[in-house]
Image (tube, rainbow, N blue to C red; front, side, top):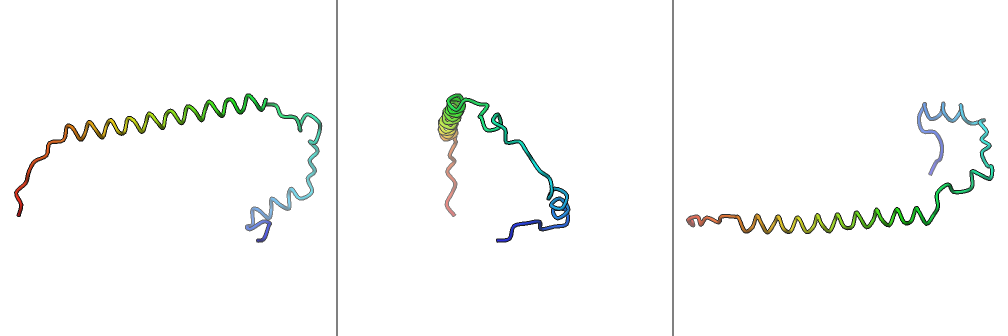
Length: 80
């Protein structure tokens, strides 16, 4: 598998930024700005909300199927 620019614009970008140097490796850049426990708590809350929404959606779908089935009027047609 080849790595590199595939088209003209990519080649120009590679040439433009080939010699650029980045120096952002200070101590503050390596420290997380977000508490891991807070992030896990937020993700857990979001997942629980989504799981509840899926369960409610499934229950509502079943109720709607039941209402449609009960209100359906079946008409007998003559056999040909």
